[in-house]
Image 1 (cartoon, rainbow, N blue to C red):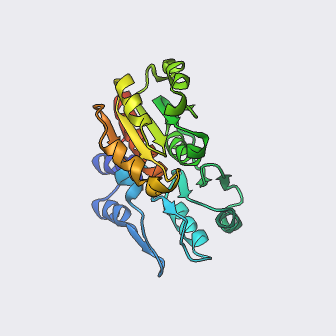
Image 2: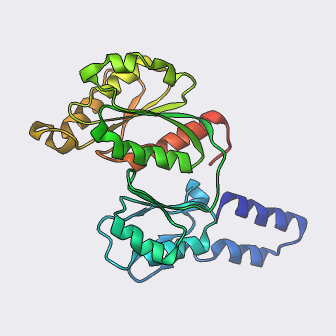
Image 3: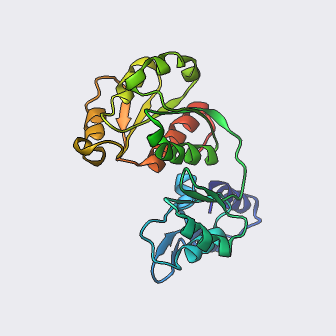
Length: 255
């Protein structure tokens, strides 16, 4: 169920087209679907503006198609399956022949609508090895209805690459900075822009980076104001948070 659907039910009550009992039944219709191996939150779209997003890694074979089908039956919005492999895509495509696979972002999309793109989100990476996490963030933001611009491979090893492209930040409502190694790029960007910065540490780096922990700690210790940090490699979390900030700044009314 979406916010628009709930408002239509409430308008129907006000105008006498929908009875109270009918409205209660429609609102309560399967808020949770029990598939035996999964309990799907069918009202998440009403609360969060996106249907439940499916994390594919670790799911038993044969379950993704059932999950996607159940979500599609109760939702009219775009459905995302993240951290998806080619094998996961083949499984979902058996149920949804028009499913899209974005291999760089590792996302499967069941596209049900095209939202107008509003505001401006900028996604920046330190290096090319950070691009998969950055694309996950950018794709989530784009599909949710945000205008996204990308600026890749402008890390601190050659900071002139970033300083020569600062015009890309003009008009940005939020910037997502994705970086591994020592993760210093988030502080530098945070010192250049006036909008919020979402820092995403990645697991890119040699042994002493400890799988992204060094970048995480650097970003958490940023001296630049306005920098917030999500978990290591959490492109989805950064993309969704950027969506919330951008939509609020753009005055879209979502959610």
